[in-house]
Length: 81
Length: 81
Length: 148
Length: 148
Image 1 (cartoon, rainbow over the protein chains, first blue to last red):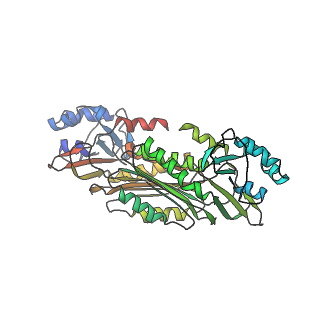
Image 2: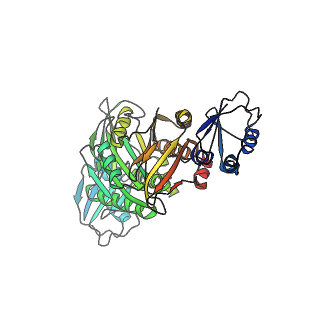
Image 3: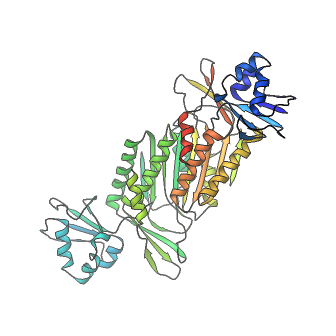
């Protein structure tokens, strides 16, 4: 599974993308796995209300299932326009 | 006093402007004077709800006083934009 | 604030570019352009726009000044043509610039609503058969003023 | 419907002219242009816009398609830049065309509201001292979506 990070999430974690093996059932489960890894992940995922998630390039939410998902992206609320 | 007519009011009366002598106190009084003149005025002023009036180039209404007014314009509701 | 009443065509691209260029840093620029379209019924070959020369400029200035007062605008522009136009011709444009998109949008809509019903222009449609019809003011346009 | 995501500048005047030209007879054309302005506090020397390449085009197409469905539009255009910009540079524009001014205005506002909060762009302000700050999403922008 490819995990992508944007904006300050990318800066805190220190890389724009990585491939991981995970058996997490939901986005929330995946976040718990990542937080348990290292302090920088813990720092990036400390406040989920400040984060958004996209699954295979569609906005989704933390309760969503990861079944069949190939690309997960984490980022702060968008500031386009 | 100069009286100006625009759009179909001008067409019905058959001229764009004229100068008249009038002692009418209000716009409504002036309209009565004009209607009494000829059939084409009667036709133009038959339905006041379909007309608007400007006094000295400012939108006004039929109750307004004509004291000191030099230019009166009659026209249908505007269709700008 | 710029108000221009003219018979000649205007260059939409150049006007938009120049307006946005003069308010660099305003953040938000909105334009509205009105184009002559086909009449709802029958085939229209031309539109004739009559106006009240002594009053038009003043009426537009009053409307634009009110918009500058009610919203936080860096600038506003109104161009309105009169005379004979054909389908596809641009009749008029407004432009607004503000720090905030909400102000720029609302002010442009306000300008349009007031131009429709409070600026001394009258449109006549010339149909292909040669008949001509004055465009009637719409109740919806008068009603649109109530929100301001 | 045209969606363009690009690093290069765009020509506001030429885009506006071309868009209006292609929808002759639509009656009403609205454009919105976003310009980099000074930060509210501190002096900003540049803005860096990051985006999510795989998702951006699709997200913008979805937003614009929804606008085409909800309003009676002849056409819609969205151009959005990414990369490094300076104060005064144009970030993005939208354009809408409709028979009716209300549809053109509302659809343009809808596009802007959704671009602000649902298109995967993130802005960073580079200040004169060298510090950089990510622009925080505004509650007001999220709230703006509720009206649609």
